[in-house]
Length: 387
Image (cartoon, rainbow, N blue to C red; front, side, top):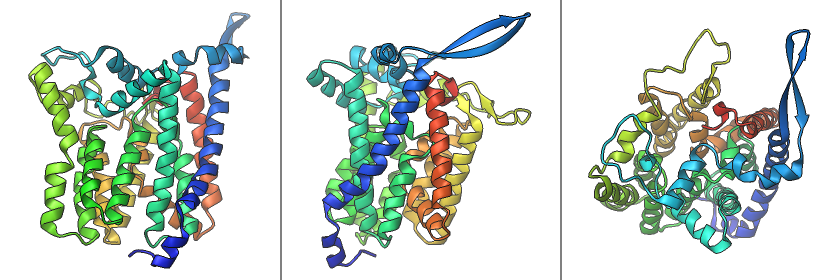
């Protein structure tokens, strides 16, 4: 159900900008301070009577800023930068060696364009991600104000999204911010009666991450829920929405002879069989995988899916559960907490549950502490925080 026209008129775009500005600035300030501190840590070993005691010394902050590329271009960011500089691998066989086919083209293409304008890579990538994050927050506020949700819930949703423990990925040269922006923009276009343009924007999302294809059923049912005819919704969802991934598959076919190389190479990152779960490890923290955090994020997504299903919001239920179920189907919990960032219906649901019982401050405190810890781990290159 939409708000009345009067209420919508009162909710200007400027109001959404203002609602997004404070949580954006405060959360990013926290990231910068913690990141610079952690990146400046120098771990020392002091020997005293044959006993090693770890010590930490704070290095030169200015030198840390000068070496920003070594702290930022790690993990997936390095793969995207490699695509910008050298293009996609032309190997024709899929082996146990990781290839950059797993990384979809829209973000590196956007990053490359920005770097040509700015003349450098790192700061242009950081600017892009933070720019798209701010736009995403604005769009999320607009989308929620086009629904039954109150202004208080809409604003709290932005805070929860900004301070979610893995939201530092939004500010790195990665796909998270761009992907969320495209999904939200598509949803807002549906709500405002522009389904064709919504499908085109969603096609851009499917050219950004494979998660886009997993969200296609949610896009279809979102069209249904907003009153569009079945034949119109099906045609838009089947012929236009998947164009991004279809075109990328066609490109990989011309390059490698295998249109599904982007999917088959995933096994080199996700070996399957749940090798990362060790119940003897009390916090389930393993190399490259903060398993306990990922499990909690997965359970949160599945619980949200059940809540949406109970409320007969099938589109939201599909959006928050299918990507998680597909990830678990591969046999690993890897990156679930990171992928939760794009499952935006979770955050207004958390806001609605917490704000009525005065839990919002507790939840925000937990999220903020978690964000600080995860950012610190990332800044110190802990592999469990890189995925």
